[in-house]
Image (cartoon, rainbow, N blue to C red; front, side, top):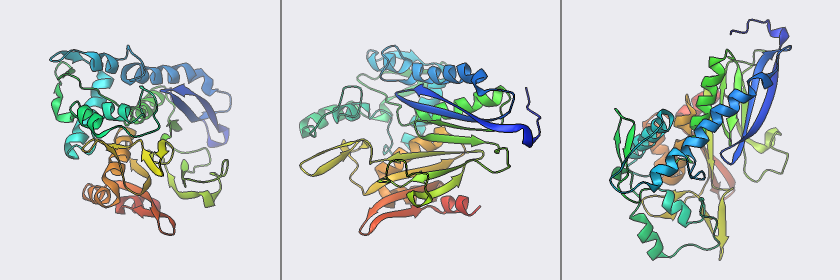
Length: 329
């Protein structure tokens, strides 16, 4: 199906729901006489597919079954899950382990995973013990059979990449049913296609943490406003998930190389890319690397990255050249 109506007959329609412990929303340009609800079941099925394969909160997901598999076992993954795992391991290799999808045991130990929250940091000995289970290079893939080898005790956590992938997959679904102008969002990760009825691009604002409730739509509460037509954005923040004890704040971003929360002054990182699968984990990587090493990584690979940092006079922005080019276009 291809929608050929004139722009005067088109409107933006919205629908929303829940997936992966968070929310999703879809905005679609449609003729006035059609309803986006006609596609809602397909949207939810697409998202449920990702959740059913990649959730560590669902004991029967493909990911959970791998995490329980005995040492030495080869585990066949569904095509979608294998694609995500492959990309995650590729990024781990490229970043020398600063990004690592096997960091899950450490995330759980610090109270940011399925095992529940905690109010104080774990002991050095507990961290050392758990770190023995962490290491992306322990995993082996067989692309021919879409299989992954469980080396023993490995625990994959795809929470830093699965939402981004679900955004891309949802966009593919909308394209496949002839909806060629849309804005999709899953847990804060977004991607847009085409244009709104008035010919303007989809535009979203990057929130300044600490903005008053309900104030984010006001321009002064936004760091930047970017166009998302045929582009994705992912924002990774240190300000929402954390705990504090004895005056020290511990972020949910755990450096897999040290077993400790990232100590940098990063408040949030936003990454623009053609695919949300790429943007989503890069936000985590940039947060772990910090502003200096992260920006060097971004510059060397022409990545569009924006850091929001704690500074002596409040929040500071730091943009990679590629991000600046997007704003100037």
